[in-house]
Image (cartoon, rainbow, N blue to C red):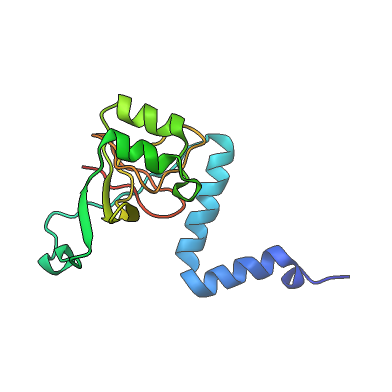
Length: 144
């Protein structure tokens, strides 16, 4: 007969307590239990009031700017952008914008999303309008 301490779920809980502490582990258990009764999501965001000027420098080969609708749609056609054309069209219809850093005609980097993407869509490339932020799998949405 197995001891309770040998069960995988108990081992996982003990590792979580060791890594994150008892209170954080209990908070997670409470949130997950409550979410089974009343489904909800905790939205997290980041607001930068004043950026360090050192982060604003970029190499001369790169061009930072907001993408035009045509540029954004052409990047959406590339599989590595992980954006569907429908997502881009919906974002543009809502007045959303995408800030990107390009190396010539190639996409080098983009800002994390600011708005909330449609259900089932995760976009790490578009910057959306005025809605509060939420988190996606690659980073935080930044609420303005």
